[in-house]
Image 1 (cartoon, rainbow, N blue to C red):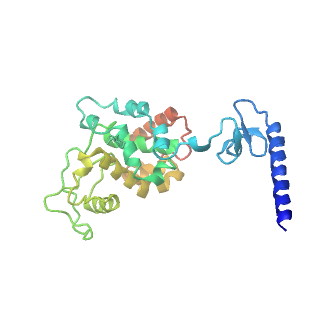
Image 2: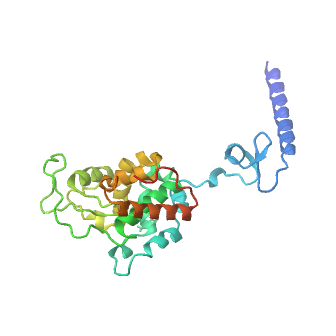
Image 3: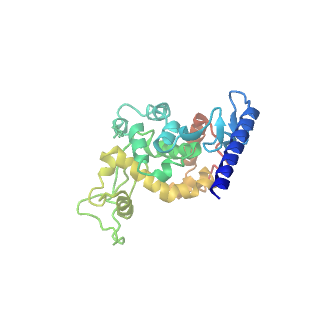
Length: 265
Ligand SMILES: *[C@@H]1O[C@H](CO)[C@@H](O)[C@H](O)[C@H]1NC(C)=O
C-alpha cells in the first residue's frame, strides 16, 4: 500500500515535470506577450493574469489596487490640471489636494478597489462644476440654515447651519446626519468639519457618491447629472448641463477613455 502510494507520487511528479517542460518549450512568446498556464502567448487576463501567467509581462501582484489604483488614475498632473484653473484668491486652492482625495478614498475600499477611469472622469467633472475648479469650499451667499424641522431623526444643533459644504456641497441636516453617521463623525454638531478638513470634505463627497451617484453610473453621464441636480435636466438649465458635459468629455479624453452613451439628461 505504502509502496503503491510512493510510486504514484513519483509517477505524478514525473508527469508534472514533463508536462511543465513541454509547456514551457511551447511558449517562446515575443517579449511583449505573456505565456499562459497552457503554453499560449497573448496579452489577455487568461495569459497575463496572476494565477494564469507563466512568464512575460505578467500582471500578477503589481496590478494596482486601492490607493494605488485610484492614484494611477488621479495623478498629480490630472489634479493640478483642474485646480490650477482656479484663481489665486480661491479658498479651495490651499484646501483641496490630490493627497487629501486619495486619503479619503482609502476609507472607501469598495470605491478604491474598483474605480474606473470613466468613473473618475464623471466624478471630477461634477467636482469641477460644483466647486469652480476647486475654488470654493462652501456655498456662496448661504441664505438659510438649511434646517428641516420635519427631519426629527436628524435634529439641527443650536446655532448650526447646514448650507452646502465640500466638493458636492453637502446640504441640509437630513444629509449631514446620515453622512456623519456613516463617517463616524457628529456632523450635526460639527457641520463645519466638512469645510475645515479636506479629507472630511472628500469623504462626505464619497459618501454621496456611493449612495446616489455610483448606482446610476451604468446609465450614462446624463443620469449622474440628474442624480446630483435633477432641476438642470429637461431644459431646466441647459448651460449647467453643457458645462458638466464639457468637463466630462475633457476628462475622458485626458484619461483615455470613451465617454459612453446617454451623456445628456
Ligand atoms: C495622506 O496620508 C499619507 C500617508 O498616511 C500622509 O503622509 C499624508 O500626510 C496624508 N495627506 C493628508 C493631506 O492628510
